[in-house]
Structure formats: structure tokens, C-alpha cells
Image 1: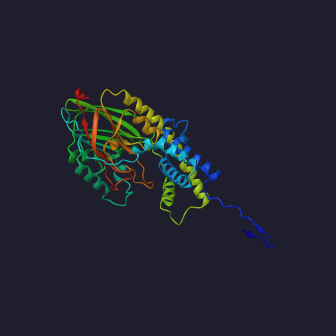
Image 2: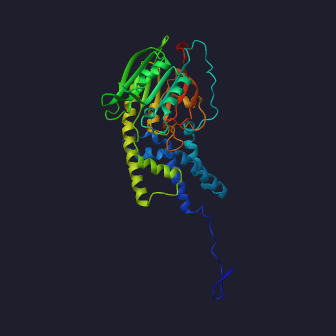
Image 3: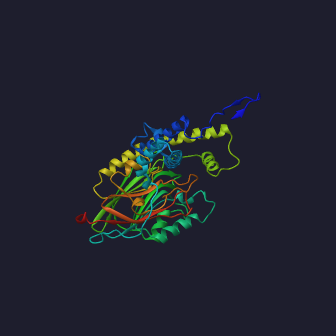
Length: 392
């Protein structure tokens, strides 16, 4: 009992816990709904539903938040526990595309009648640090050392640069010290008649056909496909660099200030403007990538050979891009990778936006991500084995 100023006794209202009320129930339902939408929203074409693609970027955070809510409702002992639990059960099947346990470098079980093992690497080299973003003049040499050390039989490079100036002919340079038999390089952008920007696939095996899918005539974003003869087999390798978000320096600085929790945060007006710009660029990229991936997916479906699809997709595994292009494919990361699979070395941590995918007739093992900061992406490598059709 409590007393007021007049000395009269009264009952104090019972204080309710901060969770368990109507407001918290609404928040629980909302977060659960957003998780389901993020996990399964990849089926919606971002050309029309770009905001669903945006929600998909928050899948890891939403999943963890639902776990937190589940624990709170269990502690509260309420039946409302089923809401976050249902959302988690519906979306838990999406976790393996983000997180893997027990990666292995062991060879596949089938060994009889297999083709030669093919080591492969895919790497967005960021123009070999042409403009010295890393503040080190040794970066290009380190990239070349990486190639030489791994010695992949097939090397796919995005944001490839080559020039006719001294020490800038990177096609010739890579061929000279790696001893590749063939190269497929395409340069949609040329400056001054001496600077070439594009994409390249190097092969230790003969190339029997080359093709290009020009997915954007105004940028270096493109996809090339290369038919490679490997003894009695032929495979088609798609080397892709899909639509970039194209953040400007001020957007990157804003993201870095948030991720690093810097004391000198931008003002409310500046933060709002940066947020609007980021959302606008994300929307444009989602829409462009959707059209690009539809074109590539249709082309892949008509391939006469088993395919390998690799490159910088600029999108997460919880996306329309990944959902479309990985259909009927195996993911080398899921086959033998481990950990979070983060491939982006920029200011946004934990993103997997680079991939090596392949047809079921091809098996892969020993997938790895090289965690060295010599680009704003990490290099991917895996060993491929082509199954004998008679053993399928």
C-alpha cells in the first residue's frame, strides 16, 4: 500500500514488463513477417517489387532479431512464442546459402571415369588497383603473385584492365608467366585508344568458341561465355560482372561512419540525404540486375554443354539474382565451403556477392576464399571435376 499527500492509502498499479504487451506483440508480428518476406521475397521480380529486394538485404539481421524475440517470449512463458518460431522455421532453409559448417578439401566419392581435375579461380581485381585505391604500389604485383601461387587452370577476372602503356598490357603479362593456352577478353570501354576496361577468362585448355552477352552498353558490366575443350569434354564458362550499385565516395564514407561507429557522425539532414541517395542507387541496381539476370539465365538454360557460372553478381544469396541464376545449379560454397562466405572486402561487412556455380554434372570441392585485401573483393577458388556421363 502507498499513501498520497493527504495520508490516504491507495493501491499502486501493477507494473507490467516492457515486453509482452500489445505494442511488443505488434513488433513481433512485424519482424516475423519481414523475415519471411526477406527469406522468400527472391521469387519477386525487383523490376516491379524492388522494395522487397531491399528487405532481403536485411535477412541476417532479421533472423537474429527473431531469435532474440523467440527467447524473450519463451522466458515470458507466453503462447505468442509461436510467431517468431514459425518465421524461423519457414526461413531456416535459407541459412546454408549464407553460413556453412564443415567445409572439406576431400575429393568427391566418384573417381572412376572422371575427367581431369580443374582448378579454378574467380576474382574481381578492381582494375589491378590502377588508381592506387589501396595506397600501395605493390598491389598489382601481389595479385599476380596470387595467380602464380594458385596456378588455376581456368582464371576468370572481373574489372579487368589492360593498356598499351609500358607494364600495362595485362593480357600479355598474365599469359607470359602463367603459360595459358588461350584467353577470352572483352573490353566494352576504351579510353584514348590505349586503355581497355572489361572482363577476361584465361584457360590452360583450348577455347573452341567465344560469346558475349552485352547486358549494359554504357558500363563495363557484362557477361562473356567461353566454350573450353577439356580432353573429350567441353564445358561452357560464364564469367559475369552484373550491375554495380555505383555508390559515390560520399556514400561510402557515410556507410563507413555507421559501420565504424565514428564519433563524428553526419548531421541529421546530411544523413537523410545520404540515405535517400543510397536507396535510389540500390533501387536502380536491383531493377537493372533483374533484367540482366533474366537474359543470362535464359542463355544458360539453352547451353549445349555443362556450365560453370562465376563472377561478381553484386547481389546476396537472398536475392532474385541468385535465385534465378542458381536454378538447377550447384553452389561451390555450399558444396565445400565453410563460414559466412563473405566475399566483399569493402565497408559493408559479411556480404557474399561473388560466386562459383556449376551444373550437376560437374562436382566441386576444396572451395576457398582468399582473405587478402588487394581489391574490394576477395578471390574465390575451387577444384572442379567433370563426371563421366555414363556414371550419372
